[in-house]
Length: 253
Image (tube, rainbow, N blue to C red; front, side):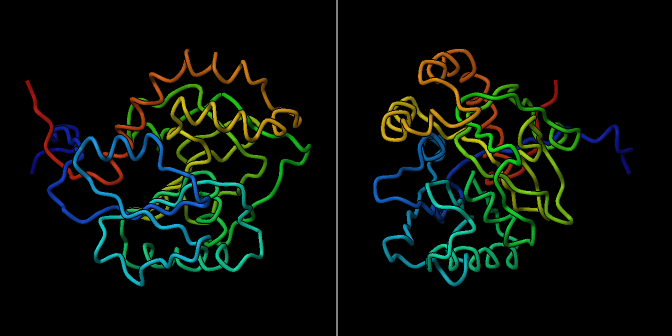
């Protein structure tokens, strides 16, 4: 047996060998999967987009899908709306079937709440809206490299780390920024899926949120993107490959 330190390196790649689509759950009629959809599409991966808020049902099993992603949106994981309660309950499907699952912002909060962790506002009322510091933990760095040092946020609620979960990245105001639960479920508080068009749209339609305590000016959003977007895209490619790709032996020289 080859000693652990001598094992050949392992890599993950996205491709269309698995012809099943990834289930995409969105929370507004005009929402899109943004750059996540662009990256997956570029690698030949199909998307099955569902909007429970419009009455579109979620599948009873993920046998017909290679995984699922729940995106963010205006609601709170604590809302009493029927479709929010249904989504929260539905998360048991990927967890039970051990299918690849990713929750983004609201999706991460839903995953945390499903696992019994509270979802609450910052004790001082601070919102993260703009670019903020991100620090990968050792577990995060072992999972995928490299992590960006600054990341785009748009939220005023966060989550406690669920029992049994592994913290992958942390921040200052909202300490729990990314976590892993089991072998296939992930939650990230931030928005690596953001496109330039989405920055324009969010800061225009949601301009009132730029006045919340802790939020950054609209100009700072665009300046931050110009500086930090390259590392974010590199991370997103690697993270999606790790989450939804297939494992391959990396080439060695």
